[in-house]
Length: 339
Image (cartoon, rainbow, N blue to C red; front, side, top):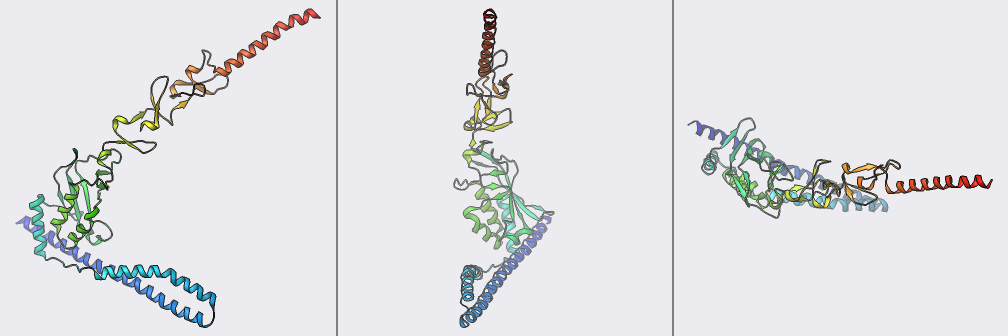
């Protein structure tokens, strides 16, 4: 008995929300009609101004008015078309309270007990665990916010919540190929979903959502199933599998093979940004395998420095200096003897 009372209560809440939705649609038609009337009024004013300017020979002014009329024609055409679409659309026929009650009973027969969140004013169902191409996504909660149904034409009044999330490796907010930040990419089902809500066919609404969740459309995923367990390269953003990713311990990030290398001295993997190319041997090395020359203070790989910490150029310069000193020392006795 208590369960029946709860369903009756939910039926009344849903019917009230559908009444608000119908009122909102009529208000939308009124708003577009008002905009259309304003454009018509502007066109009438421009017509009088254009006639006056033409009769009095104000050719420059008439040309300016003509240009303004031409620019406004696009807006005029848009509002006319929008008004025709809304005015000629099928009128929403609201269901009876008994019809909505029957919908709720059918939902429980199809998906189990309906969960009602009094604080959020929302009803929801739990799907069976979903698996697409051997990738498990777990069950989802499909939550319809009763108080937001009146915003159906501007925002989806429902959310898709992963209860055992297995998000994409490249984006934690994508919990299903067609769900991002708890919002469903409805695709071709958009019109059918909106019509089901408008007409109070709430069982059809939940069925449509579940069918989309159980189907993979490779043409419009937020993240494709092929890339689901991949890793995004920090540098180029390319998605690669875990086996094809390379970790740089210096910046603590993952990279693809194109954006990483390895130290030629110790074989440590480093990204291109953290690697250093030795100016002497032109080989990439990690920071740990570099040192500064004691004389010129330029950085080289350790293999390109001698035991005294000198690079090749500085070694040669020291040898030249030493040779010059020896030559000077050997020339001094000869000069003294000549004197």
